[in-house]
Length: 91
Length: 141
Image 1 (cartoon, rainbow over the protein chains, first blue to last red):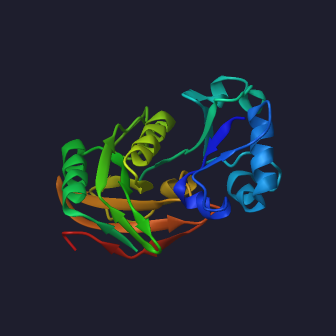
Image 2 (spheres, rainbow over the protein chains, first blue to last red):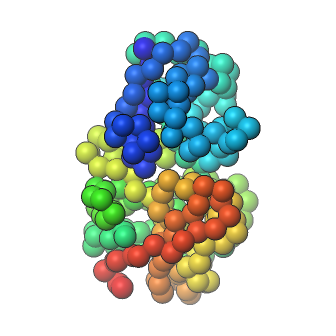
């Protein structure tokens, strides 16, 4: 089963765990499994329309899924999914 | 509240002054104990904004992935992000808000004529429509 690393501020929505092992053969399925198991994670990661929020990037191991197959990116046992913020700004 | 320890603070200010008149950015790591976040380690990161860096900053996601991994490796948390506002105050601008992430603290350092002036910490909301000021304690306060 792939493992999803949970950023510290979101652990309160994931049973205080820093990582969760989930089922699923793609990133989309793995994230769906995560939010089914921990429903409070959903509003942090997805908009009401079900799209990943603009400030959320997802990596499989060292690769950004935007440059792979996005939510259809395949995952397998031993893969690590990271939730990484997207941050910029200016005065 | 967020407390920044001396060593981390010195690194943040040095990074902001060194990159002046451009904006700097970086990550803040440390333990979170209830409502108190203590910044022990500052990680200066590269401003990857492709245009005028006097007015904008952008963090590479892979650098934030690195910061998250560093935190985990050292038994700490990624607490937030810092960046500088050259020659203006440490407010949270519309651009800051629209490109923020509500999970983290955002410390803004005002650098005027190359020297540190003041700092504020901000907590943006989920909709990225407003940011609340967070109590900030640092060695220059």
